[in-house]
Structure formats: structure tokens, C-alpha cells
Image 1 (cartoon, rainbow, N blue to C red):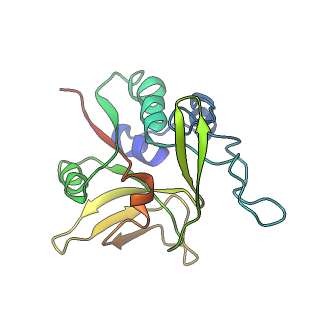
Image 2: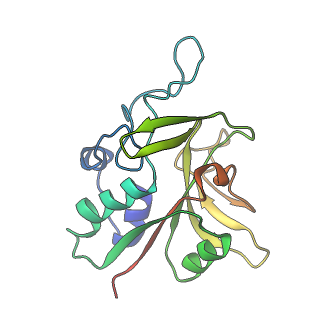
Image 3: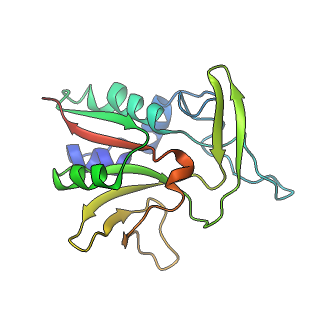
Length: 177
């Protein structure tokens, strides 16, 4: 969220401010599921589905409520599912970064949890990339908020790993027209 806001507004709120803005909820579509500082593995190595993360609808709502709206409302965030690579490239070519949900593992463990709104799929290793570029060869330039072992955070990718497990979820940004 900080990368996207910094790119749009030239100044990003602190991580503490963003965390304070994000509601907590057992359903990651409505808020952060668990402790933002929590780990995704328990001491015995099994998955910790309680300290999980947050999905696109809650991220877009928090951006609109706490950051983009108070900054004068020039921009808006929109959560999307079933997104296509073409839609991501169109947004990039219009000059707007896109947040996509991925995993770093080729094979990802999943589970379904019951929420008041119905079952929600969780994916171990949930992670986000900020897509910032699209190239003529069909590759995307992505910025990873968590640096690689080489220290590189921006690289090219042809596909988004395990994006389908998240129903091709994304947060798009645009100007209010």
C-alpha cells in the first residue's frame, strides 16, 4: 500500500498509519485476519491460518477511506477478482500501478475457513506484488515489497505465481473522473 500511495501522491503514510487504518476481521476480504506482525507457521512447522493477511476488498476500502479520500479524492482504489493479464497491462499503460496477490512457492497449501459471510480460501505464503510496468515482449515489471536474497526488489515476470488460487485478485488505481 505504501508503494502505491507513494507513487500516486509523492508521499506515503507510515506502515503504522496503514496498519491502524486496516480493520481486523476473520474474513480477509473485510480486514486483516489475525496479527499483522504474526507468522504464517506455528512452532511445530504447521500452517498458522489465524495470523494470515488481507485481501483486495479490504485493501481498496482502507486506501479509499484513510489515504486517497483524505488526500483530496483525486484517485480511487477498486478491488477486482477474475482479473485478466490484459486488464493489468491496460492499467499499467494508463500509468497506474496494480497490486496482485501471489505466492512465492510453486505449490501452495490452501484451506477453506468459515466466516459469517461464507467460506473463504486461504493460501499459505500469501504475498503481494505491485505491478509497475508492461513490456512489448509481454512481461510485467513487478516490485516486490519483500526484497529477494540478491537485494533486488524490481524484476520482470511473465506470469503471477498462483494468482489463480486468489481468484486473480487485484487492486486497481485510477483517477476519479
